[in-house]
Length: 206
Image 1 (spheres, rainbow, N blue to C red):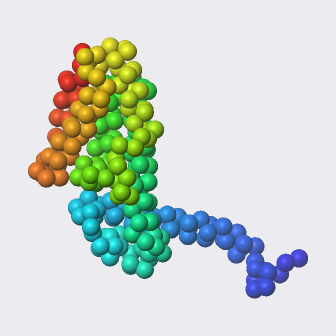
Image 2: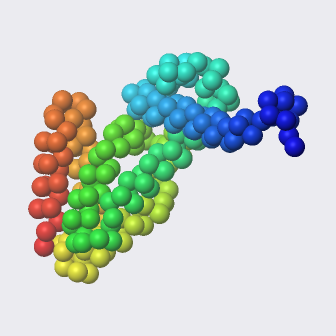
Image 3: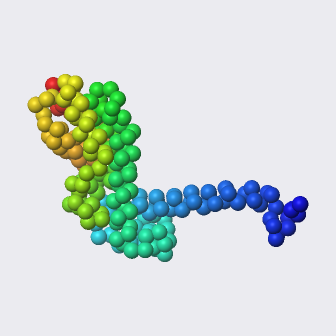
């Protein structure tokens, strides 16, 4: 029999609590890491040379904490690029590009990408990804969007005279214009997005 309350062995209650404590700590670390990455995207979108101390302040952590997660600036920039790719991939999944008409799917994609906010700003204003890599690297999200456009052409839902690359440029140009209206011109998000989706639908219609 294990004695209750004996510091040598620990009680059943302390053992039962040990696993949740570990999970809470893990969750706390994940939240801190996410806060740092969110702050890094936000600050880098305004200033590519922003000091790490300012990123730490924006994240609500000390610089020592930031360095515990990302020892060097290069480590943070690599993580930011991966974080952006993950957010874009999640947004692409939420857009359900295989459901319904291709034009409707691309409209949902614009809605989801629009909500990425400063991720878009950083993509639009920086000539290279935070890790120094060119933006033209391929991801699964790129393939999924291209497949949706090809499906639209095949099903007659997207004007066949508009090439795939042209449609992609239209989508990104509209997103840039829409986010710029909100960020730089102070337009209401809902109004700007509504105009974006209306323009996209009319532009791609056969």
